[in-house]
Length: 145
Length: 139
Image (cartoon, rainbow over all chains, first blue to last red; front, side):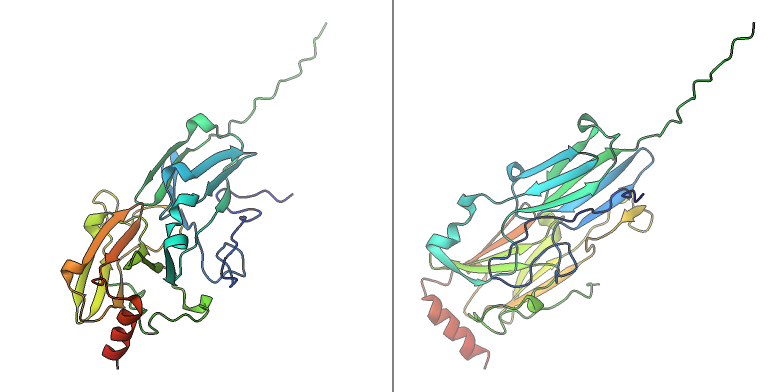
């Protein structure tokens, strides 16, 4: 059985539709470049994840735990697209839309244990390490008369 | 000192309206350039840098943006235990040709959420005139 290893992508991310109809941003093999790049550092008691989300506002970033996956989603609000009405693009390289990334962290992690912050365009999430306790088997004693 | 991700001379094909090719899009310091209210707005992605780490200067008609990565003292990058590494860390630079008619007073810059926003006042010049000036100057 194939078990997703920790912090690997699985069923890679959604909606990277590029408005200019060129090869899109994304984390799949067809992408020429990537978005939502992340680093993961290991510490004694935790992992620290740092994901690049430049230009997004904190309110537009959502992270949730679902079935052992940490799902990070970010979008831009309509008000940010002032340029569409008042001006025009001369050059466009940045991705502007909704993006999502799912990272396997295991089902033992609970929402309250996660610590997240957003600064300078970097989403930082601290994920505690879980000790996997071996379950002590209930010995089945046979009564001896 | 600077990483290999250096100069992409982006105003080379100045204000080209041709359909942009994904081949020309760099992996770092991605930039949108737009015109808004008669001014030129540049938005450069620099996630993870704070405003002290970023500098902008004008030199010979080029606007040069440099970002320096300052390592924290307690944990230099070599000692850290990365189990996954995708981000570019280190210093980077990119330069944009704006022509010699632009001076420091015409430029405002601000850093927010990892994006450097630069507003260039082209002095009420028509954007097409600005474009033409750049073309003439680069010949």
